[in-house]
Each structure stands twice: as structure tokens, then as C-alpha cells.
Amino acid sequence: RGAAPPAGGRGARLAARVATTAPPAGTSTLDKDDGDKFGRQSSMGVGDGVVAMTEAQRKALARSDAPLDYAPARAAAKYNRRPGEVAVRIAQIGSSLGGFILDVLVDNSRGEFEKNAPKRADQLRRKL
Image 1 (cartoon, rainbow, N blue to C red):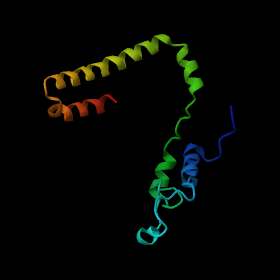
Image 2 (tube, rainbow, N blue to C red):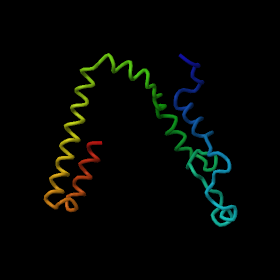
Image 3 (cartoon, rainbow, N blue to C red):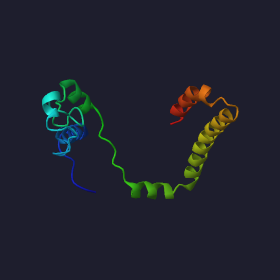
């Protein structure tokens, strides 16, 4: 199924990938003169080769699991064998978002769209 994982576990692999991933050279949006004003800039944050990771961040990274690999062909094969599960999930998502959309349309027709926008934003955030 591929190469054997490097020694040190998933956290170590992720730490190595994060710690060695730096932005490509020459992609800075700063002018050359801006470097004197602002110092060395980091476009990606901690662990990008410009900003060092702290010890606490290294420990947290070592405890975390590596992200799952996305394999579209594997996902398609799995869910092609489960059309019932797929239909139920589509119905769940459709009814949940459909109810939300209906609420927004009712708010709009009543002229309460702006008044209820914070409430709808909270509802949408919870749904997603």
C-alpha cells in the first residue's frame, strides 16, 4: 500500500512535515525595503522555517494524530456499496439546510432579515 511509515509515529511525521515546510523563496509580498521596517516576515506561521516552534507546540504536535489521507477512489468504493446510507444522509442534510433556508426566506419576506441575521448566523454555524 505504499512506503512504510517513518520511525517515530504519526506525530513525529507530522512534526517533521510542518517543521520543514517553508514558503517558496521569492513569494514575499513585501518590498525589499519593507524588510528593514518590519524585520523578517513569516507567511505561514510557527514551524514554517521562519518562526520557530515552541517546546509546548512540539509536545502538542507529538500527541496529535496525523491527518487522514483523502482517498476519493476509496471513499467512492465504500459509499457505492451503501446507497441507503447515502440517501439517508442526503435527506438529513437537505432537511436541516432546507429548514434553515426556509427560515431565512420567511425573515426576508417579513422584513426581519437584518434583525434576525445574528440568530440565523448562529443557527448556520451550529448546522455546519
